[in-house]
Image (cartoon, rainbow, N blue to C red; front, side, top):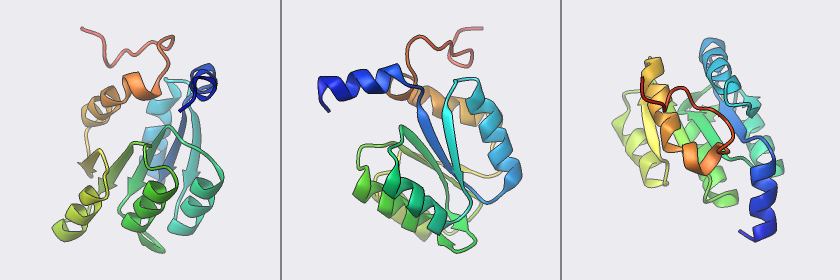
Length: 145
């Protein structure tokens, strides 16, 4: 990454993609991420996710493993081909451990099993604080109580 690209990234809000077909999960993620002043894009299936990841760059991507038109692993493979350094956080209600292991081997950061607690989401976001969120944004979930 050049100095100019880094400066541009720090000057803009983090761009996050949520690939999830469950509106309630999308709503929770959107509400939590809104605090961080993120630009949020949403896709509810593999095809829409591919279109977005082929045309835009993201700082962090959430991917559901079970989507209506295919596997989230397909989305992760596409992401790792087009944006290999972007952190990917996978969400799953599947107990298909082979699929989960296959996805982990693609280089994702973590898997959050659904249903997950907000504290799990906040802990996952802490991992990305330095890499994704600019230092000017307050992070109440990372501050001592």
